[in-house]
Length: 544
Image (cartoon, rainbow, N blue to C red):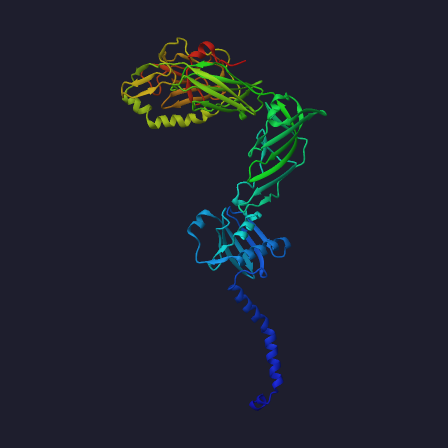
């Protein structure tokens, strides 16, 4: 087209071209203008597609604009923003004293993050918008927010109480709960978990007992069995009704009403069986420091559930084992214990039984042992003793779950010539170092037979620098006997079963000892050394 033709183009053709270009690009231009405008305005309910809330405890909520219920809440939050009054900055105490809520408003492809600060004081609620502008929320709006589920993290009264039976949680069949907000309103808690009554029978050990983490102000109980009512009334008086050994149907109504911060009601229906209460016995009521006592229990089907406390604390937690109709545990009293009695409490299920163990006064003497510095430097060093402890730790920790011993205990040697007794303060003449003796040293002839103190299983037979050649026998329930400084002629090996009086080694001079043949024989309950003296005459005294 030449210049003349272009100049002669009709005006209506030009207008058509302009209209076409405008039709093509105008929507994009409008969208860009709207998007730019959206970047620079506060959130508007009409433009919000989604709202994400993170409360002060990190709980998250997602509200969608296409959900009518969620949109009601979104409109409420936008109204809070619109009603707020501009402030120059946040008060300094607000950040530290308030719970921080983060709101993410999704508008087009943009996310605007607002930070809200709420506390118990509805007159001191603030928010900071995405452009760091600060606003104070009016008191009525703050109170309104504090009544929503999004603010529950600010209260310690919004958790529905938990009821347990023998440490098992039981859900109510019906429940309701209301908590008071900082604005003064009462809000009903939703989402309380309930469950229909099942045929499961809950076992109560020793007594009918209910436990709540938030104790009700009133508990009423109805107990029936085989169509007959055995009890109906307040929970506190059910102890006067004999229910042992029976399978019962239980109906519980619990009420919380005396605390102004909350109120509630719950109904529970379940089956239960009241087991015969546990009973505990001491095998001995009096011991010396360094001796041990056996605790026996009846009516216990899970020994691991027995709880033990002592006053003063003896520094030992016994392990209970099933032994026929009994549960048993050995409880050692450390040789250094200087009290006159120990108050023991054993708890199983709903039964807590106190017992008193009298501790007789005992004075331990002193002795000396002639071991050359050369032998000490080879056998009794930090390295050799740590190596010994590390090697013995797994052996000490394991034990037979039933008592293997029978009757009284053998001394372990034929002559019974004790050189240094249990618990004495021993001084090494070559180094002047003093230590407590944890067993009995017997004077023996080289190669003399050393015998098992009682029936048991060999759990160690070998050599360590500190002990020399040694044999350890497990007698069950944590009770072990130790035979050290033997010669290298050991006739038993790990895993062998031995009887009282069987030869398990021979006298020697190995390990930390003098040049004269001896045998160190000791007894322990797990890792606590105990005296063997009473075992020679009386054996292990257990309540039968």
